[in-house]
Length: 546
Picture (cartoon, rainbow, N blue to C red):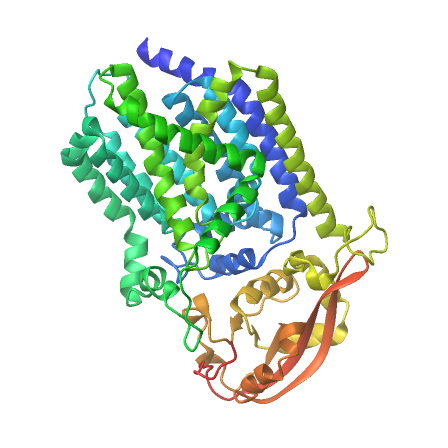
């Protein structure tokens, strides 16, 4: 009977949550189908063609989530690259919902689920674009759900460590195999136990010792690959990434840059969510000092729940905001911290229902409509050039030009493929070349994604920053062979770059161009070069063009 009761309770969560999850999945799938691929997605596609225990930039799981849809369908397209992400994010949302329901109530959980489903940076960074953040947030969410069941169970009046601590070790290890942020999650959970008197006993539990051993075992792919390659990935992530660029002017700490990082975070969360999120976090933190001094058991337990949320969110978000005053911060880096903060906003959202249900409803529905309308308009522009001033069929009066539009960084690989196929000369050179190279690691993946259906050719990168290409096809094997060099217009207009490559070939000459258009407006131009007879393996020098 107890087991049956647990199953019924679990299923009670499902009907309303299922509808929200299904609507979100369908909407994200629509965007994923029409959204042009970005540089990162093309690069991670190359991971799937060079499967290994780990990689220079990231651990193994991003290669598996990127390849999942391709291997499942046998089709290589931007959408199939994203199938794994679409599936995992739906699971992440449900796990977050269950975590909120465990910590608070079903109503708070439903509000949390709605918020996490509509936040634009969550939708794109976790739920649509194939990035390491997708498996990271899935196992991050699984770890939070496991931890909430471990630390806030109603089974006993006082906390008793259980086998869940061992499962938690595996889940944190899998988060680390997704992205190095996973180590931060493990440290934050350790600090929670250290600062919560009731849960301090977990640190000396045999289950924790077993969990740590399972954590190390789970990390085997990452540790084994790094051991084979002189710990280069760990050194890059921990030290080299933050080292100053040679000959670059020294930078000093600027608090305004940190403020800009905070404001950018709020904008990406969407202002109607970002500002309330920080307001409830500040309000909660200030009022919690009184609650922590209370001896009433229900208040004490509630304060521990909020302490749990503080630890899984604030160290990462505040740490990266502060670091942003000195160092460039990528927009997705602090987002797992905000993922934890949403739990608190969902709780306060339930409290606001007591004051005005209609305003909470308007807040959620209005925000959802605004965010999704903006996303659809951007998607329309990506496919039709709606906002270009010279668009051939503008829906609105245009205000952008390709030179000032950051979305031109997204490449229409299907149009690229079609135009190469329509050019007998370029197609002939593609099929006669032994390998293909470009001058930027992030371009190589998109070019390979576009051309593989026409001709499966090895792709490499000649650059001072080769990332994974340091460990992929060795150019030694192509000595004496002919290659095809493809680059963008802005690199073509750097003759010193092409001159650098001439030292490695008998001859390099331009053979054609392809224009990528959007709504009749040229947004990118690719230049093709024939590179005859590779003379020696490519090695970047201190004088390589940066």
